[in-house]
Amino acid sequence: DERRALADTAGAARAVGLLGQVLINGYRRADAAALLAPALEEFGAVGDDAVLAMLEHQLARAHWFMGDNDRAIELADRALARAERVDAVAQIAEAMVSKGSIISMDGRYREGLGLLEAGTMDIALIAGLGFLAPERRRDRLPPGRRFKNGPERIAQLRRALRRDGHGP
Image (cartoon, rainbow, N blue to C red; front, side):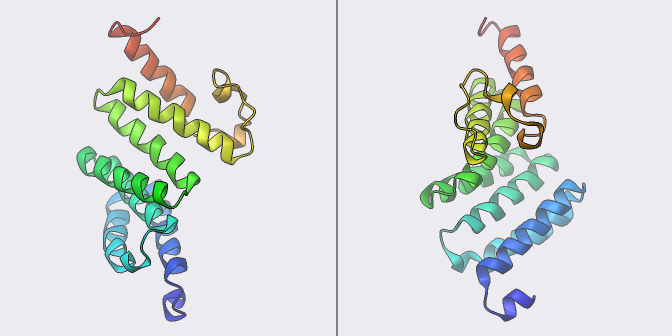
């Protein structure tokens, strides 16, 4: 509210997005959605900005964890498109990882795996670890820089592909 009073719209939107993230991570997904959905309307005047991509991505995560995968994918796509337009690589990477996880659980294994791998590589690049060879990138990320459960999720997707007769 203080940032709104100062007309720092982007700062207020960022604060709301971070609060939404905290609510999601604290298993209060419905509360996060109730906070984030109106915030997208309120802060829409900011235009194409990384902060709106962050709000869309966090709302996508809230819907995903509430079981509304269709809405989650729609919001993740919006976040990706907006982040691409403003070259917000961190937001692109995070939204790719979320969307990859969501769609892989809906049976779109190859597409999900591709998004997960691309997103984790972007996260490595953001962390200054772009020297990593693509085939070893996940294994060599330092513990504090690994996407939580990313390597396990990618291994799970690869097993599912092999089980379905796709891949070695």
